[in-house]
Image (cartoon, rainbow, N blue to C red; front, side, top):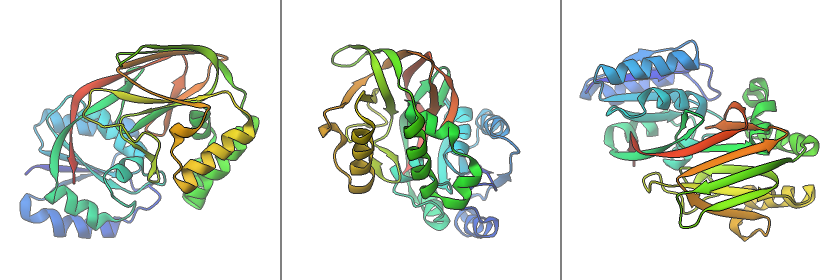
Length: 296
């Protein structure tokens, strides 16, 4: 078994000594591992791509969702399996695998004992994502949230920034087309945001797309129509804090499809797996069976 560990020592829940101890204990009996510490997301992508080209069996991404996304970019379309050791704050990828951020031993157990499943990836303007992407307010929060606040406050930093961004956010008038589902959707109206889910859990075990599956050849789109600021904050609180089904809200539409195109005036930010990628216009599409993922 040839394995490469790509480790981000700047992740919030990181601990190098615990990582090396767990890796030595769990992986040594089945071939060991090679440890790489990239200096940037681009270097992490290059390392993962090189591992795939050299027929490594597994690449293990150790860090937050941004680190995992960088490794996914390098492995997309290859036969090298992705293992995840989540150490970040949002922990979208880890939550979808029932892994707690910082539980290195449990993640290593999954890598050794789990199954490999061929899953779809999403792609936004050429950039792949494993779990989710977002356009509008969601991406604005990611754009305005500083890493220092995430390291200092963890989840509270996201809640704080969501409230701050909501109070200052100006809705964009969006032209949106979703195709490849049971029914094509065309909208031309102001929107707060849209989430694009390849997996059901958006972050922190918050299930915004219960029908999303990473191997169904579809993406799930959650559209937040114009409503009052009070209604939006109430919607978010009900879902994030109490698990209320988001589809019950009158200002939310959920649809499935293979491709989405959106333009906005004024242009608005988009993010993939929590990292801001740019501004609209943007095209999102599903890439079926694009990645081997180690799952429970």
